[in-house]
Amino acid sequence: MDVMSEKKMNSVLVVDDERSNISTLRSILSPDYTVYASSDGEDAIETAEEFLPDLILLDIIMPGMDGYDVITQLKASDKTRHIPIVFITGLNNTDAEEKGLAMGAADYIQKPFNSVIVKLRVQNQINLVNHTHMLYERTVMLQQRTERLLRLQNSMASVLASIAENRDKLSGRHVEQVAEFTKTLLGAMLERGLYSDEINEWDFEIIVSSSFLHDIGKIAVSDSILNKPGKLTTDEFEIIKTHAIEGERIIDDIIAEGGDEDFLHKAKIFAGNHHERWDGTGYPRGLKETNIPLQGRVLAIADVYEALVSDRPYRSAFTHDKAVEIIRDSKGSHFDPQIVDVFLEISGQLK
Image: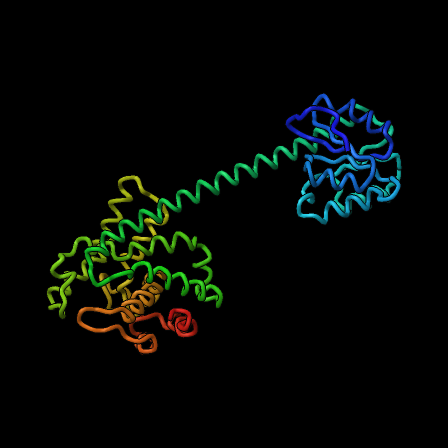
């Protein structure tokens, strides 16, 4: 291998056992590209792996490894398979051309070389390479930006949830656990095709982060009621029930201030619907069956299960098996019966 010009933006590897052909291509290409050269197949593969050129011009007929052998190895390697390869050949043979294209060649350049044709064919391939690189870089930038926004929204959701949680001495790690149970349950539903048309339209990360805010409305409930160690009176329970509507109102205020993000709209649905019941006896609106948004029906099970297996000042935590039994007994009354069936199948994962 030898390097025949100083480093430029794009690079080309020329592979030919005839030095005169390498010299000709060097004179044509070196003003515009960094040109590497190899005179045999083995050196070509080593050079390609080391320098990862943007394009390879590959002779077909060479002693030892011919061009077909070289392209086979290059395309079999994860490191070099993406590099476009243009065959250079004196063969005027349709079968040979078809074979090369079938093996992954991007184009052909005929010998003897026409400098204008060589430049145009090389530039066409380089333009495609540069465009692909640009799209890749933009994709990476968008992914990074999306990840930053997701971290930001998760942080905001966590902070807001913590504000409510820290006032509610009973909840502990309630919101985190409910979010995890919700994610597990949704994944199991999707695997079984239950409500999959709707679930497939959701972004799981957004769903999980938005579920953190399901109890944000507790901010508006008095500490004396929120942290009462004994049983609530009827009036006190009515006040507690307002946290669903208050949660919607708080999230609406955030949206109105310029936070019109999908995860906030999803959070509002969680906040306002996780206490609705399948039989229509829930709150705040007494919605029934599939009139309850799917998010609310899923979170209802995760929310109740987490509450049952957690200690409360007025009772100790139920065992996992007892909590599962209670949810089973509430199938078709409190909870969507089909979602309960999935919950029962995967309940062992929640221990």
